[in-house]
Length: 456
Image 1: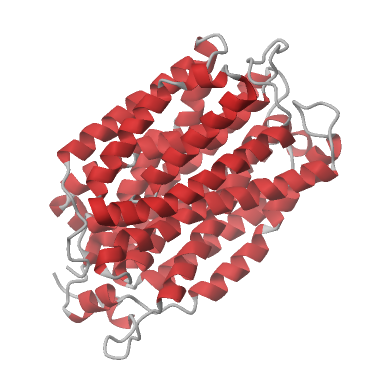
Image 2: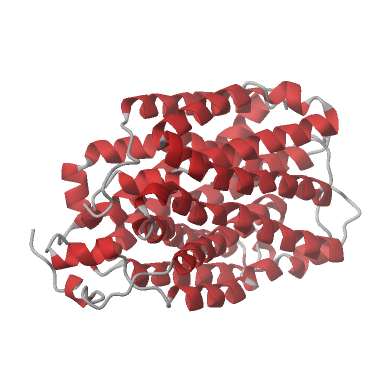
């Protein structure tokens, strides 16, 4: 394949300094923390605020499902973002592409904080929300794979999985910052009704976390602009391996890796969004609901978010632990064991959630620990499936197509199964186990990647 003119504008190979380990870790961690912060701010508002403000009043379950549908719309945009930003990342370099993705995400999030509500402008309000949500999804479609490549392409061979956990660590950190800020605002604007935010919170308080994103983006841009291109990418430029159409190349020659990578991520995505989004709905739903509501655990928003944050701490811990495990035992073997754990976890939902506060906390700790253990190795595994000249595109498409199969529909399916089971979460847990079984089959069909040459 011929080298493109855009590729020639990349950092000169002879003078490209190596990124220091601390710079690599900070750049990959800070960027994904901001991206996941923005995403979680929306996820929290989708449960807490948007059903009240952006859709017609009526059946509360219907409004929640509509809010989750908008939430899932972003997942549809993510593969498009992966294709667009992957094309840029494989042709002009990782650094420029990551800066563009971060700016897109940040601008969309801040604008959501200034949107008018349904009461003010009618159906224009949810329409604008969908547009900005699609922009969020488009941006995060290019963010993750770029951050993972910055980490893994600059890592020592024996520590690629460890380095690959740092962009993954952005997920629990973003969750804690986003929900922590929502918690602070909710505590300052308390509600007398634990199932509904206060009028002040609904009027203006919910906007603060969205607008605060501008501060996060400035920090992220400052860190990422200090990066230089990885040796793997500059070597691809020097040897003429950069191709004109990375998408066509990866589909023609690496379609098997695309399929496997997509299903590798399936259980991770379903578990991810059940534990962070569905759990908030189920945890806050009243034990004895009124008409139009489904029964849940009956916790107040503040109490359950604190419980979630405690669980997410284990998410972060096991994300970091999973890196050394995957470097020592292999990505495939580590993930097979963890996926078996997810299958068993899905079948244990009812006894755990019926065991009072201790049972619910154990459920959160187990779910988020498994989440960290399955999410951490993906930062190395998916990039290792593809050669350098299509790695941004290939890893990004696999990661983000899986978001449609898993994350886009998981909250919606979970609410439907919750309703079908008469308010019991039993079918939601079974759904998780079935998705994990599909991931297990994909892992059994795949090969180990820990010893592949990253500069191929």
